[in-house]
Image (tube, rainbow, N blue to C red; front, top):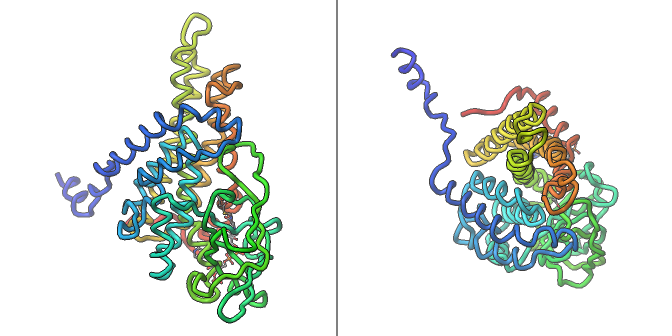
Length: 401
Ligand code: CAA
Protein backbone atom coordinates (compact mmCIF):
# COMPACT_ATOMS: atom_id res chain seq x y z
CA UNK A 1 0.00 0.00 0.00
CA UNK A 2 2.73 2.43 1.07
CA UNK A 3 4.81 1.34 -1.89
CA UNK A 4 1.91 2.07 -4.22
CA UNK A 5 1.45 5.51 -2.57
CA UNK A 6 5.12 6.35 -3.00
CA UNK A 7 5.09 5.22 -6.62
CA UNK A 8 2.05 7.40 -7.34
CA UNK A 9 3.40 10.39 -5.43
CA UNK A 10 6.69 10.33 -7.30
CA UNK A 11 4.94 9.85 -10.59
CA UNK A 12 6.54 6.52 -11.39
CA UNK A 13 3.20 5.33 -12.80
CA UNK A 14 3.74 7.97 -15.52
CA UNK A 15 6.32 5.82 -17.22
CA UNK A 16 4.26 4.41 -20.03
CA UNK A 17 5.60 2.32 -22.86
CA UNK A 18 2.29 2.17 -24.72
CA UNK A 19 1.84 3.91 -28.04
CA UNK A 20 -1.24 6.10 -28.43
CA UNK A 21 -3.93 5.47 -31.06
CA UNK A 22 -2.52 7.96 -33.55
CA UNK A 23 0.94 6.46 -33.29
CA UNK A 24 -0.43 2.94 -33.73
CA UNK A 25 -2.38 4.07 -36.80
CA UNK A 26 0.77 5.54 -38.38
CA UNK A 27 2.67 2.34 -37.68
CA UNK A 28 -0.05 0.26 -39.29
CA UNK A 29 -0.35 2.54 -42.34
CA UNK A 30 3.41 2.44 -42.88
CA UNK A 31 3.47 -1.34 -42.48
CA UNK A 32 0.63 -1.79 -45.01
CA UNK A 33 2.32 0.51 -47.49
CA UNK A 34 5.72 -1.17 -47.07
CA UNK A 35 4.40 -4.71 -47.37
CA UNK A 36 1.91 -4.05 -50.19
CA UNK A 37 3.49 -1.26 -52.23
CA UNK A 38 7.22 -1.42 -51.58
CA UNK A 39 7.93 -5.12 -51.22
CA UNK A 40 6.72 -6.35 -54.65
CA UNK A 41 9.41 -4.54 -56.71
CA UNK A 42 12.14 -4.00 -54.15
CA UNK A 43 14.54 -6.71 -55.36
CA UNK A 44 14.38 -5.56 -58.97
CA UNK A 45 14.79 -1.87 -58.09
CA UNK A 46 17.80 -2.74 -55.94
CA UNK A 47 19.46 -4.85 -58.67
CA UNK A 48 18.88 -2.34 -61.45
CA UNK A 49 19.49 0.76 -59.27
CA UNK A 50 16.10 2.09 -60.38
CA UNK A 51 14.93 5.17 -58.51
CA UNK A 52 11.53 4.50 -56.83
CA UNK A 53 9.68 7.31 -58.61
CA UNK A 54 6.14 5.95 -58.17
CA UNK A 55 6.77 4.87 -54.60
CA UNK A 56 8.13 8.31 -53.63
CA UNK A 57 5.09 9.96 -55.18
CA UNK A 58 2.81 7.63 -53.21
CA UNK A 59 4.72 8.41 -50.01
CA UNK A 60 4.14 12.13 -50.67
CA UNK A 61 0.43 11.50 -51.17
CA UNK A 62 0.26 9.54 -47.90
CA UNK A 63 2.00 12.29 -45.94
CA UNK A 64 5.30 10.48 -45.25
CA UNK A 65 7.41 13.29 -46.71
CA UNK A 66 6.46 16.03 -44.27
CA UNK A 67 5.49 14.04 -41.23
CA UNK A 68 6.49 16.43 -38.45
CA UNK A 69 5.73 19.69 -40.26
CA UNK A 70 2.88 21.96 -39.16
CA UNK A 71 -0.27 21.36 -41.29
CA UNK A 72 -0.27 25.06 -42.22
CA UNK A 73 2.72 24.22 -44.47
CA UNK A 74 1.07 21.04 -45.75
CA UNK A 75 2.72 18.76 -43.19
CA UNK A 76 1.13 15.94 -41.21
CA UNK A 77 1.85 17.57 -37.82
CA UNK A 78 2.94 14.34 -36.16
CA UNK A 79 5.39 13.74 -33.35
CA UNK A 80 8.87 12.27 -33.68
CA UNK A 81 7.72 8.93 -32.24
CA UNK A 82 5.25 8.55 -35.14
CA UNK A 83 8.02 9.39 -37.59
CA UNK A 84 10.28 6.77 -35.99
CA UNK A 85 7.52 4.15 -36.20
CA UNK A 86 6.98 4.87 -39.89
CA UNK A 87 10.74 4.75 -40.57
CA UNK A 88 10.96 1.42 -38.78
CA UNK A 89 8.20 -0.17 -40.87
CA UNK A 90 9.45 1.21 -44.20
CA UNK A 91 13.01 0.11 -43.38
CA UNK A 92 12.02 -3.50 -42.79
CA UNK A 93 11.43 -3.59 -46.53
CA UNK A 94 12.98 -0.82 -48.62
CA UNK A 95 15.84 1.30 -47.32
CA UNK A 96 16.27 3.25 -50.52
CA UNK A 97 12.80 4.63 -49.88
CA UNK A 98 13.33 5.07 -46.15
CA UNK A 99 16.53 7.08 -46.54
CA UNK A 100 14.68 9.44 -48.89
CA UNK A 101 11.98 9.80 -46.21
CA UNK A 102 14.58 10.35 -43.49
CA UNK A 103 16.56 13.06 -45.30
CA UNK A 104 13.38 14.81 -46.42
CA UNK A 105 11.84 14.83 -42.93
CA UNK A 106 14.73 15.21 -40.52
CA UNK A 107 17.35 17.15 -42.39
CA UNK A 108 15.46 19.26 -44.89
CA UNK A 109 11.89 19.88 -43.64
CA UNK A 110 12.71 20.01 -39.93
CA UNK A 111 15.67 22.33 -40.50
CA UNK A 112 13.63 24.68 -42.67
CA UNK A 113 10.67 24.75 -40.32
CA UNK A 114 12.77 25.37 -37.21
CA UNK A 115 15.22 27.92 -38.57
CA UNK A 116 13.84 29.26 -41.86
CA UNK A 117 12.10 32.62 -42.31
CA UNK A 118 8.34 32.74 -42.87
CA UNK A 119 8.98 33.54 -46.56
CA UNK A 120 11.30 30.55 -46.92
CA UNK A 121 8.73 28.26 -45.29
CA UNK A 122 5.88 29.55 -47.45
CA UNK A 123 7.91 29.23 -50.61
CA UNK A 124 9.63 25.90 -50.05
CA UNK A 125 8.09 23.83 -47.25
CA UNK A 126 4.72 23.31 -48.89
CA UNK A 127 6.36 21.88 -52.02
CA UNK A 128 8.49 19.55 -49.88
CA UNK A 129 5.73 18.26 -47.63
CA UNK A 130 3.55 17.28 -50.61
CA UNK A 131 6.46 15.47 -52.24
CA UNK A 132 6.29 17.76 -55.28
CA UNK A 133 9.91 18.58 -54.45
CA UNK A 134 12.50 16.29 -52.89
CA UNK A 135 15.23 17.95 -50.88
CA UNK A 136 18.89 17.10 -50.27
CA UNK A 137 21.30 18.02 -47.47
CA UNK A 138 24.69 18.94 -48.92
CA UNK A 139 27.34 18.92 -46.20
CA UNK A 140 29.88 16.20 -47.09
CA UNK A 141 32.76 17.01 -49.39
CA UNK A 142 35.60 14.98 -50.88
CA UNK A 143 37.78 16.15 -47.97
CA UNK A 144 35.17 17.03 -45.34
CA UNK A 145 33.20 14.00 -44.19
CA UNK A 146 33.51 13.44 -40.46
CA UNK A 147 35.48 16.68 -40.07
CA UNK A 148 32.53 18.80 -41.08
CA UNK A 149 34.13 22.18 -40.24
CA UNK A 150 36.75 21.75 -43.00
CA UNK A 151 34.41 23.01 -45.72
CA UNK A 152 36.07 23.91 -49.02
CA UNK A 153 32.83 25.02 -50.67
CA UNK A 154 32.73 28.81 -50.52
CA UNK A 155 29.97 31.37 -50.72
CA UNK A 156 31.33 34.84 -51.43
CA UNK A 157 29.24 37.80 -50.25
CA UNK A 158 28.50 39.97 -53.30
CA UNK A 159 26.07 42.42 -51.70
CA UNK A 160 22.60 41.28 -52.72
CA UNK A 161 23.68 37.67 -53.37
CA UNK A 162 26.32 35.06 -52.61
CA UNK A 163 28.45 33.35 -55.24
CA UNK A 164 28.62 29.64 -54.47
CA UNK A 165 31.50 27.41 -55.61
CA UNK A 166 32.50 23.91 -54.60
CA UNK A 167 31.83 20.19 -54.73
CA UNK A 168 29.68 18.00 -52.50
CA UNK A 169 29.92 14.21 -52.27
CA UNK A 170 27.62 11.26 -51.53
CA UNK A 171 24.49 13.39 -51.61
CA UNK A 172 21.32 11.38 -50.98
CA UNK A 173 18.59 12.33 -53.51
CA UNK A 174 21.32 14.25 -55.36
CA UNK A 175 19.91 13.54 -58.80
CA UNK A 176 16.20 13.94 -58.18
CA UNK A 177 16.07 16.76 -55.66
CA UNK A 178 14.81 20.18 -56.62
CA UNK A 179 16.14 21.88 -53.50
CA UNK A 180 19.53 21.63 -51.79
CA UNK A 181 20.52 22.87 -48.37
CA UNK A 182 24.16 23.66 -49.07
CA UNK A 183 26.74 24.20 -46.31
CA UNK A 184 29.50 26.63 -47.34
CA UNK A 185 32.32 28.67 -45.87
CA UNK A 186 31.69 32.41 -46.05
CA UNK A 187 34.62 33.53 -43.88
CA UNK A 188 37.51 31.12 -43.47
CA UNK A 189 39.13 33.21 -40.72
CA UNK A 190 36.16 32.55 -38.44
CA UNK A 191 36.36 28.74 -38.59
CA UNK A 192 33.03 27.06 -37.87
CA UNK A 193 31.49 30.48 -37.10
CA UNK A 194 32.19 31.48 -40.70
CA UNK A 195 29.96 28.75 -42.13
CA UNK A 196 26.47 29.32 -43.56
CA UNK A 197 23.70 27.20 -45.07
CA UNK A 198 21.89 28.22 -48.24
CA UNK A 199 18.72 27.10 -49.97
CA UNK A 200 19.66 26.37 -53.59
CA UNK A 201 17.21 25.43 -56.33
CA UNK A 202 18.77 22.81 -58.56
CA UNK A 203 17.64 24.33 -61.84
CA UNK A 204 19.69 27.48 -61.20
CA UNK A 205 22.66 28.13 -63.50
CA UNK A 206 25.89 26.55 -62.30
CA UNK A 207 24.41 23.52 -60.49
CA UNK A 208 25.74 20.31 -62.05
CA UNK A 209 24.89 16.77 -61.03
CA UNK A 210 27.60 14.10 -61.29
CA UNK A 211 27.06 10.42 -62.09
CA UNK A 212 24.91 8.23 -59.84
CA UNK A 213 27.02 6.19 -57.41
CA UNK A 214 26.96 2.40 -57.77
CA UNK A 215 26.63 1.39 -54.11
CA UNK A 216 26.81 -1.70 -51.88
CA UNK A 217 23.35 -1.03 -50.42
CA UNK A 218 20.39 1.37 -50.66
CA UNK A 219 21.05 0.95 -54.37
CA UNK A 220 17.90 2.47 -55.78
CA UNK A 221 18.28 5.74 -53.87
CA UNK A 222 20.18 8.24 -55.99
CA UNK A 223 23.49 9.30 -54.48
CA UNK A 224 25.51 11.82 -56.46
CA UNK A 225 28.40 14.25 -56.45
CA UNK A 226 27.17 17.82 -56.98
CA UNK A 227 29.21 20.65 -58.44
CA UNK A 228 28.41 24.34 -57.88
CA UNK A 229 30.12 26.82 -60.20
CA UNK A 230 29.43 30.51 -59.65
CA UNK A 231 25.85 29.81 -58.53
CA UNK A 232 24.11 33.10 -57.65
CA UNK A 233 22.25 32.57 -54.38
CA UNK A 234 19.95 35.44 -53.29
CA UNK A 235 20.71 36.82 -49.82
CA UNK A 236 17.25 35.87 -48.61
CA UNK A 237 18.12 32.20 -49.19
CA UNK A 238 20.63 32.07 -46.34
CA UNK A 239 19.21 30.22 -43.32
CA UNK A 240 19.53 32.02 -39.99
CA UNK A 241 21.95 34.72 -38.85
CA UNK A 242 25.33 35.09 -40.54
CA UNK A 243 27.61 32.30 -39.24
CA UNK A 244 24.80 30.02 -38.02
CA UNK A 245 25.45 27.33 -40.65
CA UNK A 246 27.59 24.89 -38.65
CA UNK A 247 25.24 24.95 -35.67
CA UNK A 248 22.33 24.48 -38.08
CA UNK A 249 24.06 21.39 -39.48
CA UNK A 250 24.78 19.98 -36.01
CA UNK A 251 21.24 20.58 -34.74
CA UNK A 252 19.68 19.09 -37.84
CA UNK A 253 21.98 16.06 -37.69
CA UNK A 254 21.09 15.41 -34.03
CA UNK A 255 17.50 14.85 -35.17
CA UNK A 256 18.58 13.12 -38.38
CA UNK A 257 20.41 10.52 -36.35
CA UNK A 258 17.11 9.52 -34.75
CA UNK A 259 15.73 8.84 -38.25
CA UNK A 260 18.76 6.78 -39.25
CA UNK A 261 18.66 4.93 -35.93
CA UNK A 262 15.02 4.06 -36.72
CA UNK A 263 16.09 2.91 -40.15
CA UNK A 264 18.72 0.63 -38.58
CA UNK A 265 16.12 -0.64 -36.12
CA UNK A 266 13.77 -1.49 -39.00
CA UNK A 267 16.54 -3.30 -40.87
CA UNK A 268 17.38 -5.38 -37.79
CA UNK A 269 13.71 -6.11 -37.06
CA UNK A 270 13.02 -7.02 -40.68
CA UNK A 271 15.94 -9.46 -40.82
CA UNK A 272 14.98 -10.93 -37.44
CA UNK A 273 11.36 -11.53 -38.52
CA UNK A 274 12.55 -13.25 -41.70
CA UNK A 275 14.96 -15.38 -39.67
CA UNK A 276 12.23 -16.43 -37.20
CA UNK A 277 9.82 -17.38 -40.00
CA UNK A 278 12.47 -19.29 -41.94
CA UNK A 279 13.85 -21.16 -38.95
CA UNK A 280 10.36 -22.36 -37.94
CA UNK A 281 9.83 -23.80 -41.43
CA UNK A 282 13.23 -25.15 -42.38
CA UNK A 283 13.94 -28.60 -41.02
CA UNK A 284 17.30 -30.23 -40.32
CA UNK A 285 18.10 -33.40 -38.40
CA UNK A 286 14.39 -34.18 -38.16
CA UNK A 287 13.04 -30.92 -36.67
CA UNK A 288 12.69 -27.21 -37.46
CA UNK A 289 16.06 -25.49 -37.10
CA UNK A 290 14.47 -23.04 -34.59
CA UNK A 291 14.29 -25.97 -32.18
CA UNK A 292 18.03 -26.46 -32.32
CA UNK A 293 19.68 -24.50 -29.54
CA UNK A 294 22.31 -23.11 -31.93
CA UNK A 295 19.56 -21.24 -33.80
CA UNK A 296 17.18 -20.57 -30.88
CA UNK A 297 19.95 -18.78 -28.96
CA UNK A 298 20.76 -16.64 -31.98
CA UNK A 299 17.09 -15.59 -32.12
CA UNK A 300 17.13 -14.80 -28.40
CA UNK A 301 20.19 -12.56 -28.81
CA UNK A 302 18.62 -10.86 -31.81
CA UNK A 303 15.36 -10.15 -30.01
CA UNK A 304 17.13 -8.78 -26.94
CA UNK A 305 19.58 -6.53 -28.81
CA UNK A 306 16.81 -5.19 -31.04
CA UNK A 307 14.57 -4.38 -28.04
CA UNK A 308 17.48 -2.58 -26.33
CA UNK A 309 18.07 -0.53 -29.48
CA UNK A 310 14.34 0.16 -29.79
CA UNK A 311 14.24 1.62 -26.28
CA UNK A 312 17.08 4.00 -27.15
CA UNK A 313 15.49 5.05 -30.44
CA UNK A 314 12.06 5.70 -28.89
CA UNK A 315 13.70 7.44 -25.93
CA UNK A 316 15.62 9.81 -28.20
CA UNK A 317 12.39 10.58 -30.10
CA UNK A 318 10.54 11.17 -26.82
CA UNK A 319 13.26 13.54 -25.58
CA UNK A 320 12.95 15.52 -28.80
CA UNK A 321 9.15 15.62 -28.55
CA UNK A 322 9.27 16.79 -24.95
CA UNK A 323 11.75 19.57 -25.69
CA UNK A 324 14.68 18.03 -23.83
CA UNK A 325 18.30 17.73 -24.94
CA UNK A 326 18.59 14.77 -27.30
CA UNK A 327 22.04 15.12 -28.90
CA UNK A 328 23.59 12.41 -26.72
CA UNK A 329 20.49 10.22 -26.90
CA UNK A 330 20.32 10.32 -30.69
CA UNK A 331 24.01 9.45 -30.96
CA UNK A 332 23.51 6.50 -28.57
CA UNK A 333 20.44 5.35 -30.48
CA UNK A 334 22.26 5.45 -33.81
CA UNK A 335 25.35 3.75 -32.40
CA UNK A 336 23.46 0.83 -30.86
CA UNK A 337 20.78 0.41 -33.53
CA UNK A 338 23.26 0.44 -36.42
CA UNK A 339 25.49 -2.07 -34.63
CA UNK A 340 22.45 -4.29 -34.01
CA UNK A 341 21.45 -3.99 -37.67
CA UNK A 342 24.90 -4.96 -38.91
CA UNK A 343 25.40 -7.82 -36.47
CA UNK A 344 21.96 -9.36 -36.80
CA UNK A 345 21.56 -9.08 -40.55
CA UNK A 346 24.76 -11.14 -40.78
CA UNK A 347 23.19 -13.64 -38.35
CA UNK A 348 19.94 -13.69 -40.36
CA UNK A 349 21.89 -14.58 -43.50
CA UNK A 350 23.70 -17.30 -41.54
CA UNK A 351 20.40 -18.75 -40.31
CA UNK A 352 19.09 -18.84 -43.89
CA UNK A 353 22.22 -20.72 -45.03
CA UNK A 354 22.52 -20.91 -48.81
CA UNK A 355 19.11 -19.26 -49.26
CA UNK A 356 20.38 -16.26 -47.34
CA UNK A 357 23.02 -15.69 -49.98
CA UNK A 358 20.54 -15.24 -52.83
CA UNK A 359 18.46 -12.16 -53.51
CA UNK A 360 15.04 -13.81 -53.42
CA UNK A 361 15.08 -14.19 -49.62
CA UNK A 362 15.60 -10.45 -48.87
CA UNK A 363 18.10 -10.88 -46.01
CA UNK A 364 21.20 -10.38 -48.16
CA UNK A 365 19.83 -6.97 -49.22
CA UNK A 366 19.10 -6.01 -45.62
CA UNK A 367 22.69 -7.02 -44.72
CA UNK A 368 24.06 -4.79 -47.47
CA UNK A 369 21.74 -1.93 -46.46
CA UNK A 370 22.75 -2.21 -42.79
CA UNK A 371 26.32 -1.10 -43.44
CA UNK A 372 25.44 2.45 -44.44
CA UNK A 373 23.68 3.06 -41.11
CA UNK A 374 27.11 2.84 -39.46
CA UNK A 375 28.44 5.46 -41.86
CA UNK A 376 26.02 8.22 -42.87
CA UNK A 377 24.82 11.09 -40.68
CA UNK A 378 27.97 10.59 -38.62
CA UNK A 379 29.96 7.36 -38.52
CA UNK A 380 29.99 5.02 -35.53
CA UNK A 381 33.21 6.72 -34.49
CA UNK A 382 31.61 10.19 -34.66
CA UNK A 383 28.70 9.01 -32.48
CA UNK A 384 31.27 7.94 -29.89
CA UNK A 385 32.88 11.40 -30.05
CA UNK A 386 29.48 13.03 -29.47
CA UNK A 387 28.64 10.68 -26.57
CA UNK A 388 32.04 10.85 -24.88
CA UNK A 389 32.15 14.66 -25.11
CA UNK A 390 28.74 14.79 -23.39
CA UNK A 391 30.02 12.47 -20.66
CA UNK A 392 33.12 14.58 -20.12
CA UNK A 393 30.93 17.68 -19.86
CA UNK A 394 29.17 15.95 -16.95
CA UNK A 395 26.19 14.21 -18.58
CA UNK A 396 26.42 10.75 -17.06
CA UNK A 397 23.00 9.54 -18.22
CA UNK A 398 20.06 10.54 -20.39
CA UNK A 399 17.38 12.92 -19.05
CA UNK A 400 14.24 11.18 -17.73
CA UNK A 401 11.88 14.03 -16.83
N1 CAA B 1 23.80 21.11 -31.44
C1 CAA B 1 24.11 22.42 -31.42
N2 CAA B 1 25.40 22.89 -31.50
C2 CAA B 1 26.38 21.97 -31.58
C3 CAA B 1 26.11 20.58 -31.60
C4 CAA B 1 24.76 20.16 -31.53
N3 CAA B 1 24.40 18.86 -31.55
N4 CAA B 1 27.28 19.93 -31.71
C5 CAA B 1 28.26 20.86 -31.74
N5 CAA B 1 27.70 22.09 -31.66
C6 CAA B 1 28.38 23.40 -31.65
C7 CAA B 1 29.38 23.48 -30.50
O1 CAA B 1 28.76 23.92 -29.30
C8 CAA B 1 30.38 24.49 -31.02
O2 CAA B 1 29.87 25.80 -30.86
P1 CAA B 1 30.67 26.94 -30.01
O3 CAA B 1 32.06 27.01 -30.57
O4 CAA B 1 29.86 28.18 -30.21
O5 CAA B 1 30.66 26.45 -28.61
C9 CAA B 1 30.40 24.22 -32.50
O6 CAA B 1 29.18 23.54 -32.82
C10 CAA B 1 31.57 23.39 -32.94
O7 CAA B 1 31.51 22.17 -32.20
P2 CAA B 1 32.77 21.22 -32.03
O8 CAA B 1 33.96 22.04 -31.53
O9 CAA B 1 32.33 20.07 -31.22
O10 CAA B 1 33.10 20.82 -33.54
P3 CAA B 1 34.07 19.73 -34.13
O11 CAA B 1 34.79 20.33 -35.28
O12 CAA B 1 34.90 19.13 -33.03
O13 CAA B 1 33.05 18.64 -34.74
C11 CAA B 1 31.65 16.72 -34.76
C12 CAA B 1 32.13 17.97 -34.02
C13 CAA B 1 30.60 16.10 -33.83
C14 CAA B 1 32.76 15.74 -35.00
C15 CAA B 1 30.98 17.15 -36.11
O14 CAA B 1 31.95 17.64 -37.03
C16 CAA B 1 30.19 16.04 -36.76
O15 CAA B 1 29.06 15.76 -36.36
N6 CAA B 1 30.76 15.38 -37.81
C17 CAA B 1 30.04 14.38 -38.59
C18 CAA B 1 29.32 15.02 -39.73
C19 CAA B 1 28.18 14.18 -40.25
O16 CAA B 1 27.38 13.65 -39.49
N7 CAA B 1 28.05 14.10 -41.57
C20 CAA B 1 26.97 13.41 -42.16
C21 CAA B 1 26.72 13.94 -43.52
S1 CAA B 1 25.03 14.20 -43.88
C22 CAA B 1 24.41 12.71 -44.43
O17 CAA B 1 24.99 11.68 -44.28
C23 CAA B 1 23.05 12.82 -45.00
C24 CAA B 1 22.69 11.72 -45.90
O18 CAA B 1 22.82 11.82 -47.09
C25 CAA B 1 22.01 10.53 -45.36
